[in-house]
Length: 495
Image (cartoon, rainbow, N blue to C red; front, side, top):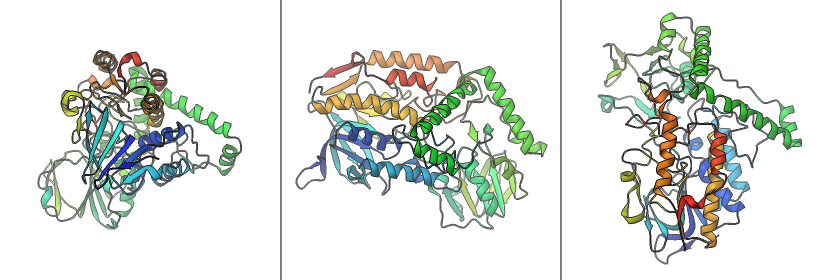
């Protein structure tokens, strides 16, 4: 592995700089290894690997995609303990992959990526970090993801609160919630997982809900040892099971994008509410009034039962004010609490706003994306040569596994990097008309869906109400489009 450090300077030169060690960053590193490219560095702001699955350690944290699909196709794990793996097991899986493919030696820990600038003369990226260390690479791969910057609500008076406050992504495990009066703000994907665990310990739990999510039962159960043994003995059986899971998940596309089938899915979810919640007022409070698919569809078996507990109150009037030892709701009621837990998600559509990324002719990414993030295939941006995004804008999913999307992108990016590394080309920069045509096509497909209907408020949407998060179709269609790089789509320059 070549990592040239300039004498007396905190500056490294390498072929490829990767940012992040979640599924995207580690996957890119592994693909480089498999391609025989050892000259790369992975930047990681933390002292551990795993990205989202390292950071989120709240009680009940688990994946809502079956384990067989939420893993690399080239590194299947026959030993998953459950159909839906929990956080620790997923993080262990990523660590195993890093060790097996000898990626750890490439990782620089404690290095926070702050920006990058492209040098047109040398055709390299100068990457800057929080501690002043610089990295120079011929290609830059962003695997930072979108679910890593916690989003905090603006609650009046919260700065005066004398109790404990933390976000689900920064869980304070040293604070014992047993017997405490707890306020939970938010009812998203994280909250529906930790609320049942908190409700078991807290003396009182006030759950402040802005918008109820659509929830379906979670078909989770332990995987029998006999099945694990079969997967280990005959790997082809696991591949067949994975394929079956893939197509089952792919069929969920219709619940998100087909209005008629979406209504059927809504009916099933409402039926689930009726079966699990007996109180008519509570049932009404947790029933969404928007079309399924507007927000992320969630899976849970214990969230609704937790709301039935006598120590749990669901409040829909909102938080009007926070005082030293209490929360005042929109209806004027004051509730004394010892702790406030935010289950308010992450910055998604604005995840890159804090980074100083400068491309050709001094073009800034923030300016380029001022009216909304646009890319070609969610991977490249015109004016920013040799910069590749993994799980970039409009490549998220509401129905299948994002790991499938990441792998599609890895195969696309490695084709470009392999040619850059060999010196066959110096830079690739997607043509603006190609990017514009793709964006027009993509948003044309998204325009007639649930996100354009009045009343839809979702983290899928940017400040202008445009969906900058989801891929608007089947994942196999995305795979088809990223199987091979069409270099006619790019301005290609010699080294």
